[in-house]
Length: 172
Length: 291
Image 1 (cartoon, chains in turn orange, red):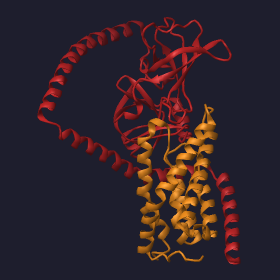
Image 2 (tube, one colour; image 1 turned 180 degrees about the vertical axis):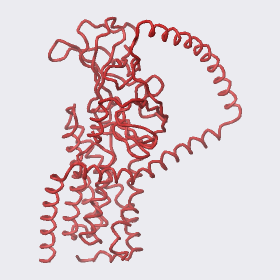
Image 3 (tube, one colour; image 1 turned 60 degrees about the vertical axis):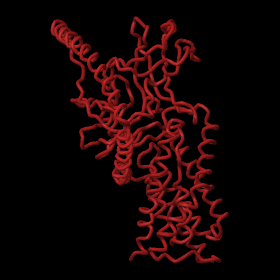
Image 4 (tube, chains in turn brown, green; image 1 turned 120 degrees about the horizontal axis):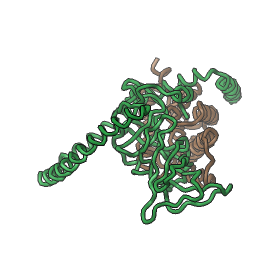
């Protein structure tokens, strides 16, 4: 039974990291930067959870980010779900630490791009210097992805070990 | 391996079908989903705000007795000065009521003030928001103006049970009418937030400034609310004009940037002015809470 609900328990265990990212966004609020880590949180579970569990976990992460922000409904959640399907179908990409780091940066940047463009779509005004702003935000997302992946993955792996989720195969 | 590939393909097809359903789904369902996730996060935001308050409390508690005595003395002086001002205000208030009675002036909308602590701040190019620790349970309604003293902070955009989201003056979604200091004819200008430049200070834009307007010399011109539209009470300070005005492309009016009257990202506490009688704009806000 626990393994079936592993995605939910894992989402609850990951939530403090998301709150931590909100706290970091709070600190950087005066520079108009959002610290986005929802894409990073998806990497370690995608190695071990079953695909449907990974999908539900990704949707939760996305909806948690969107809930208090003016971005179109479902845009981050659906982008993360698509990433979860891709990652859980291509586990060899996450076989080693460099692969995971690369995936963290790429998934985080793409998900960040999705919410940035989505927010731009519903915003009532046009951007002043869109290219530099989006570049900076994506750079921050990529850096956050690389820096924060290892501690998040350690926490998530510890939780998955406790829940009895089978470890990732060495040669998937 | 083939099974994995087939499973992936089926998942992508399922996702595509879900996306189509999601788009066609009634907006009430999407709003319910958003509300559920926002409510789930509310306790954590409360905890965050309360821990920050506790840290401030212990930081203040660690100060020496001499410092506290000096602060108390300063406060006593300020209180004495304010008391004199208060008496003067009382006379003005009585005179105001008398004149209103004579002219049968329609009393502007009245507000109930709800003081709320700030839980978190969140900003990007597309939004500048704060989350406050008061919500529907405390009588807050969408569209209510948020102030700090005499300064406008922003407007409530979304209300949850115990938290509310406030769009700051500099947020792209913010709009209101304004009077400029030094304009004797009280012509109306428009204030709206702009998509801020990352790493830059967020500012709003003041547009439709009359061509012949000249800001007062030696000091930045103050920008006040007009009280029109029934959202903000009149004569609240929105901020200051930043530098000189410049001509717009049309050439009939001038534009300038607005520096908020306070550092909006360092506020610990704000007041929400909830209108005692709901105004027509609120119905529109409730139908479009996420904007």
